[in-house]
Image: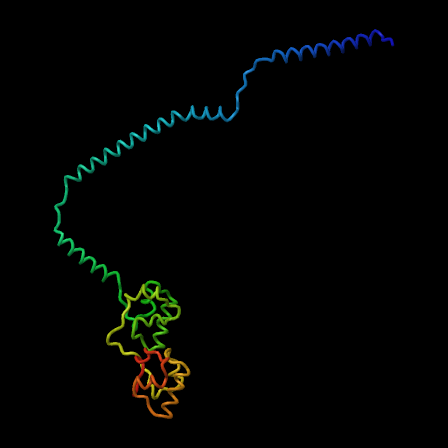
Length: 242
C-alpha cells in the first residue's frame, strides 16, 4: 500500500495530536491542579451559624441577668415599704361574727326560694338544671295535680331525675297554708277523675261502680279498699269526700 504525500502528512498530524493528548492527560492525572473549594456541607453551615449566634446568646443572657436583678431590687423595696404599714391584729371574735354576717347576706341575696305553686315558667328557669322545657312541664304537671303538696313530686315530672332534683330541692318550697284543688270523689264525672295523674282508668271505674252500687266513699281508708293496694298514697291530698 502506498500513501501520497498529503495522506502521510494527515496521518502524521493525527498521530501527533493523539500522542500530545495522551501526554497531557497523563500529566494532569499525576499532577492535578491545586484548587480551593468552598465546602457546602452541614457541618460547615452549623459552624458558621454557631459563630454568628454565640455573641447574640451572650448578649441575651446579660440582659436577662440585668432584668432579674432589677425585678428583685424593686420587689425588696416594695416589701420593705409594706412592712412599715402593718395593720394591727383584729379580734378573732369580731372576724368570725363579720364572716357569719357576710355568709348570711350571701345566702339571702344569691339564693331565691321559689314557691312551687305560684312560680311561673320564667321564675322556674332560675333553678339549676331547669330550662324552658322543664319549666313548662313543671307548670303543666302542677295544673294536672291541682298543685304540689310535696317538693318530691317534682320527681314525677317527665324526665326529672334524682340528680337534677337534688340540685334544686333546696331552692323550692311548698307554702304551709296551701290547699290543693281537690277531686270530689263522690260527684265528679268519670272523665274528670281519670284526668288526674294518680288515678288510672281501672281505678276510676272501681270508684264510679262503688258509688253507684254501694254508696258514697267517706274516708281514705274506704277509698283504699275500693281501689286496692296499688293506689298512690299521695292521692289523699287531692280527695274531697263531700
